[in-house]
Image 1 (cartoon, helix red, strand yellow):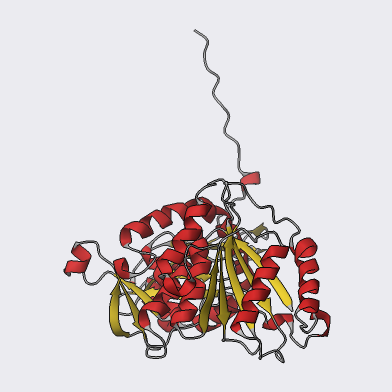
Image 2 (cartoon, one colour; image 1 turned 30 degrees about the vertical axis):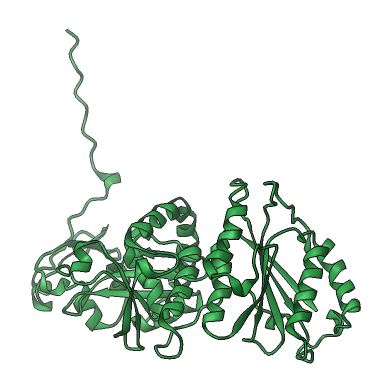
Length: 428
């Protein structure tokens, strides 16, 4: 048997992770320990509220949730639900959680038998349970004892690899028709809202779209938009809306526009540090030249950064958004700096279509003056070395550039210029 202990700051998140597995048909709630009723006699809200109410007894405990998985050898598929409940209770007793409320879930989405246990670190008297070194001290001792008591395959002899052990919530694209729409949307939202840093609805959608989910306000003239409502939809592989939309207020976590605004503000203090890490990753990907936007995207993809180009109705690129999956944050290019903006990135590309769509400098006569220093050459008139300067005026076409490119040979270096004498001020 292999035990994995994780703590977190969101009880709701780990609870919904297991409850959504039930709705998807790949899990079952086996038991609710230290609850007033049996698990099957309660609704999901009742099971969650029991944990939230006890955790609220000590608001100073920030990481108050406990998520444990007990993983068994693939050969032990004959373990019954009752036996798994006994093992879970024995394990929680061994790590000092026997008096805590906890839920036991059996999952069927892996090749090996395993259960998940959801609990909290706050006791009924409001005191905090210290979990420092619990995995090394209490967990390892009780694990070895349980293996002997229940005649389980020992961890050292198990064919189970650690890489196969569930490492928390994993997200994948939602495909319409393969799972229940509301449960699928709720699952994606819980992970994204709790894990990622973003500052507006557009940035949130930049993340959600990668999982085929969209937060939709509707058109500006619609009643949903006027009343500041919000719908959540599924999308197909081509970005088209499919299925019936779900109101934000109908979802369990109530991710309404008003509640999202609070999350936007809550994430702000952490964005400065996220910005440094993201720009570092982009700088690394931008080393050297890249021939087109697809190569640029591919480089950033290797850095776990997804690039979203924003275009208007005419297909003209006007903005760029970076979704950093490694650091779990989203930034517009303009937020990171001018060199990361869409205009600066597209200016480096060799793709003439993108340059035409984004910059359109060729269609603007005399928009700027570029002074390009040329290499010093001997002055044939007086035999001295002079420094010539090319003055290039960006015109409508190459012919105008040639006609407006005068060479100046009368430039005098600053060191050889005569200094003007300062006039002495008369003392009155």
